[in-house]
Image (cartoon, rainbow over all chains, first blue to last red; front, side, top):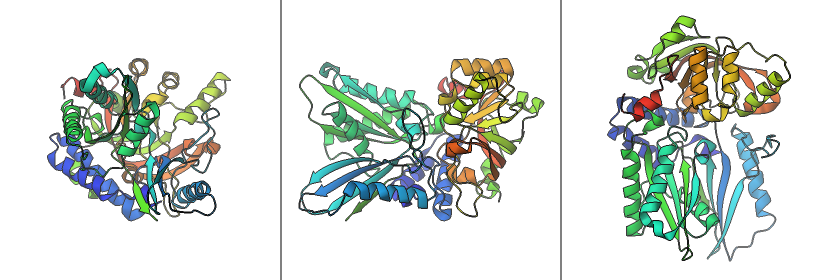
Length: 261
Length: 193
């Protein structure tokens, strides 16, 4: 519920830094409105954005932990209550009939087994204005790093004003079709301003960010030098014949919350 | 409460526009103008448009007369007790492109959302003398403070996709497409602004 009305310090900091280094006067005014928006949301318990998203959860379960009852049911029930009690919009519907489920469930939950006896829940309420601008490609290895850079930059630039820039660009590189998509989503949980621990990937993140911002879409597509606030890349070894690249776009109203039990 | 108290330097630069549109004001708006909207508007998004289309296909009237009106693409979040409405920022407009020319033919004077419109919608706007505005996406809490009254007019079952009437005051937006066919996003891309 808190994830709906409260921006985390990392995204607020990124918006402030962007405002102070923005070249366009109009874009600076708009960034200022977003900072005011976060303040109003937090003080008056109004959602930061009306699209409180599909609830996406990454659940890490320590292998030494024993859970009584259904963890899945407990999470879905928690989401249902959080959206109801938090006055968050219910945005989930049947894909065929388009009838709203009325509870914002089911949430999309990814489970991982890890060492230890802790349970970690990471929640990302994912708005779909930005989700719709995401994409995946299966590049031939001959396309190389440049092919991957070009795909990510094009994906972010052609999205234009649709995903509510300034955006956060999550990239999953390698693995398989579904692994790349999951990595792209998971990379959005990394705190903004934190680079990949791998130097070559950290360099790529900076290079792609610079290139996206050079292209001038800008805040809300209104111009300026802040189309993206960050590029996060997660990688995984792939087949010798394959170079999957997934791009998951997130809006500036980037809400996320982590909790360890 | 006036939003002017937050950012007077910004709000004072906005062109004041009253809703529904006055024909002369509508044709005087230019791509790139920053506007402050006051008056009544109607809302609708994906499901609302599907329901509009179903009525029109059956030859039945729409629940409202669209002539001169502004249709805002938004699915608001529910109001807490004591609030007029929850967060109410724009949704992405291209999803409504398929339905828009038909509504412009019925006299709809303007639409408001975020993101570019299709060539067909842009053409229809020039033909019928309509405008398209962008509201600030991801500022739903702030924009909710510009909404003074809210009531459901039709399609209540559609929840956030119902047709609402909002009375707004000093609601900020940018003119993207004017009645002459200019497109502000395109002007920015081409470095004309």
